[in-house]
Image (cartoon, rainbow, N blue to C red):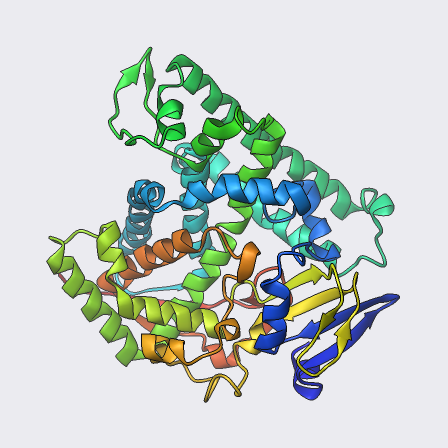
Length: 454
């Protein structure tokens, strides 16, 4: 896809048997699709996620999507995100402690290591339960999530050989059915327990959420039930009666949070750690900023402290430019669209929005393969086409959790950089990218962590 886009810039058509796919990367064309509320239907590729996520926020369209988007927007309100900061910081401390407990210099593949902790974080923020309390079930759940993602990819690249009617008869189909049962039962169990908890506490905390009152954070016990930490699940339960949400509706949104909220963030963190390891001067500047902010906030990372890490944020944005977790989007066009080169995309056509290539387009990014966080200084952002940078998509279907993701990435990287010097083992220039739902290398991405003496 990358070589074809360079050869036929700025648009080409690829036939997949009888299905034409139009691939675009020019910012004007991307804006024409993403900024139009008519073109919100996802491409057929997303159907491989339906058995797992059903039709939640990621995969739904039309009236259902509009209703869910409106309802879930409050889930990521600034005041709500503040309640999640402690969870993100605690998980970042667990990451650091795990490395310290190994002792001395540590060389690890950061992908499974970081993924474990981002899954823990989203599990606690989405469902209100800590995987650390589940013992062996923690590793089992992580394994099921990872294998389910891999099976979805397997189906994307074998749609012509394994149609749905036959897929269930294959070993992969039987495995998917088993894993789906495990994942859905896990989520359903948490939802049932959460609903029971709120019944035992007379829905006191749900009423506070629904009324947008101050959210209590004490650990009082009511009828023997300790008050649980705020979770996205609570917000769904708070609005479920007014919006007539069934347990299945709630489950598909919680499962969507789990899928979207751990792999994407994990890979962005991994690539950032690798980039910082390769650029010692930039790493040192990040560490200096973190230490300075920590002094200002009495050696504590808070919501305000994380927001003050402007240079780290620029590094994250530049990493997401070079290695966007979501490297493409597929949409079905609802009406004819005229492109900047005067070509017409007919209604009903599937369009591939090439995020990876627009992020490296030399017409908009000078020296596009060079890592330069200062590309994201305010004055440079203002001069750039707004649709030349789309790590969280754009328009009506932009990523609802992008602020949450940025806070999580800052919390984890700031804590690691403050405690360790990072040194490269595997270099990004040697990386081979695998075609997956999320951009990632097809081999380990190892980084050396050298403890910083207090």
